[in-house]
Length: 129
Image 1 (spheres, one colour):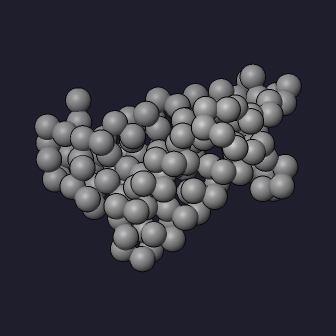
Image 2 (cartoon, one colour):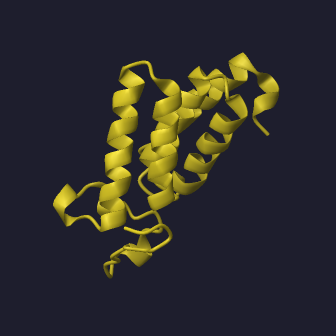
């Protein structure tokens, strides 16, 4: 897949779910190519995270977000990696984006975002605008 080429396959219900929730809970074989690639990079990011390789983890989530810019899984977990790396401002931006995107939909990631923001504020108060 060449860079910048969209492989997104939208279904008629996806217009009602701006974040592509229709792809979040389906079998990997039913996802669009971008959905598959984002899932692949998110899985790799989680492996790096569990191996205490937080820089690589963050980079994997960056790659996932190239394919699906509003992927809540990638935003949430990249923020977690960035907290550990001391990149509090970057983590805060991701968590605030998660709250913005997830506020009117399923609200699955809101608790993680609120918890993460509390950690950031405890470590560095001025990191959250």
